[in-house]
Length: 300
Image (cartoon, rainbow, N blue to C red):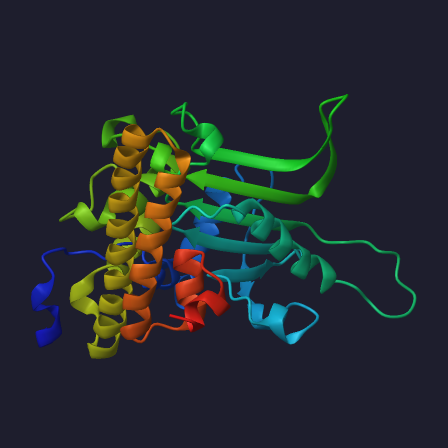
């Protein structure tokens, strides 16, 4: 193994890093993993048999919109579009952003000339390493599936636009409690970095491929470097968020003010954004990790 790997005591990558998530779900070689994961999320609704990866930078109607880069953007055989994102840090307008992004694969289906406006389904999927504020008093969030609904009849009004949010922070099942394929996927995503071997509960060709893909010993020098940068960014922002939350809670208790928590969180975010910028991470990645705007990052 390369000398760069001597700092790693883990056998498998952290799937919640930008590098890890894209390695598992974002490459054509591993599309069987993405297909299995999508089918686990959509169980009973539709069956995805194959996908084609699409370039998300082709979306949007102007240059700024086309700079939006998703972790995974793909299209199924039946024309259905899927945006799949990993998001580690809560952003105040995260829901707005996910809905805004869903308009891109809708708009790209428009046709010039004689067109009947028929659209293929669009799915926006957020794998979230945080809990929505409204779920913090409950431990049963985990999975949300949102569609346009008639609030009076409580029936789905339009079934071709779906938002799925998986709150990993609310997932606490142990190996013996895993019943569904989705349970197994969520356990693997949340715990893989801490495992030293593939558990007996995660058997089958798909999970064999998952653990083989995630094995750090198989990385070449460039992959190790990219993973290390991504891991450092993940650790920095996670430590910063944890510290800011604790400082905010302490200051909030002392002062009884919400402003203390928000200011502490903001200061920590800015500090770690500076560190990521100094480490050479792209502005797009820093925006995705921290939630800061491009303008704020450029001023650092």
